[in-house]
Image 1 (cartoon, rainbow, N blue to C red):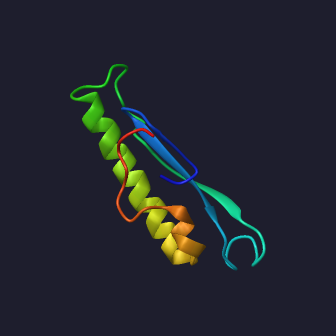
Image 2: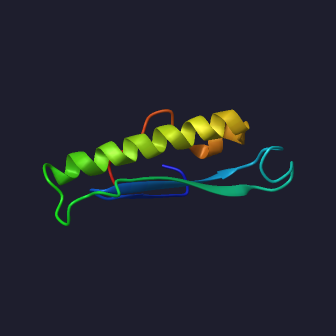
Length: 88
């Protein structure tokens, strides 16, 4: 998803390139990052760690895609319409 994605039991980040007049001008690609974090996370995650990672990745992807659409990024910044939750 995007140029780079990180997902953990308490956070996720999605980086993507955006070619848009609203970001870096018409001839350049701006590189953007969207992240979500849980600041009050206990030292050890409670529950299913795989499910937590998927949930954070899904939220970060949704925010990144909405941002790419709002900014008018070419090809939505290369982000798929649905999150890809399996590692490449």
